[in-house]
Figure 1: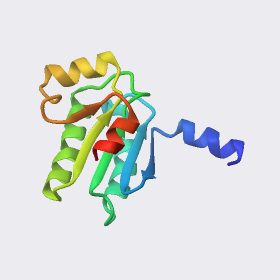
Figure 2: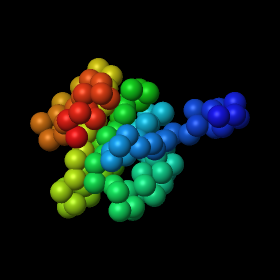
Figure 3: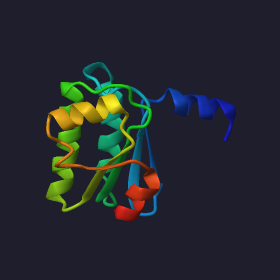
Length: 122
């Protein structure tokens, strides 16, 4: 991969990739109102495809999440429920995990410490 492509991917707020039959979204920014446009665009494009029944969201590069971000993640989760899909979050930091716990989403979502653990569970 050319260096310019690597820089471009690093600057993107959301990058999708496949791990077998799972779509993994690597989010590289805070999940807050101001950054949701690009994140939503990338995820909507991938989730519109026929092979979008298993989704993991990698939160290892997310520093914080606000109420708009929570609402967005819940909407992704609900869309997968209608397809009887699999949904999980990977490696949220303590701040993000605290927000998810406070609003009760850790009881609803599967939260994994590592991607390997999440992929095996899917």
